[in-house]
Length: 192
Ligand code: ADP
Ligand code: MG
Image 1 (tube, rainbow, N blue to C red):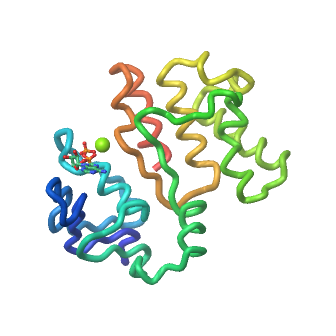
Image 2 (tube, protein in one colour; image 1 turned 180 degrees about the vertical axis):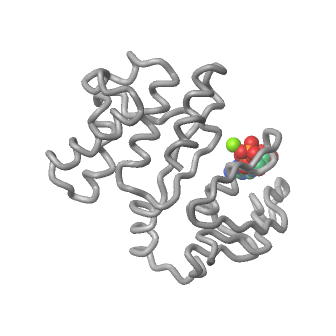
């Protein structure tokens, strides 16, 4: 089977050639296969976020290669890249990054707006996800009225609404109490 994500001897250097040059990733080779559930552990500053942003194509690679579904990433056009971002990866961040002026269901449906999905269809998809994560009664509430664990489940629903092949999460429970963290990690494990 072919890895869905592969990095080959990746090096990421911040501020290359300047006094504050910093090697954040040094010779990193990983393979992630379809349906695999992978966790990267390491102390703060070891390069976990840098690796995720590199996989997403948001961080420039200094040396080495990234392959997405067997295709070398430097061969992607702008259009390939933005298609990937919309339908290949779902992303969850430590600090939820919800839109606080939109209610829960509109937050979840938002990525579908950019795919020009009809309103009824996108709200229906959002509703299914809300139920899946046990927060359907909060659909019309603003995110600020939800607990941290509930907000992170909203963020996970939003990351899943475009049916991505891969869900990336950057310290998704780093900002939660231990009980909420357990529920959120179980949710991620379940959907995998
Ligand atoms: P982690 O997510 O594991 O805490 P990061 O990937 O955020 O680690 O950071 C790895 C290292 O790179 C850290 O030492 C951090 O200070 C440094 N770093 C991160 N972003 C930048 C940047 N934009 N410019 C310079 N150094 C950075
Ligand atoms: Mg980080």
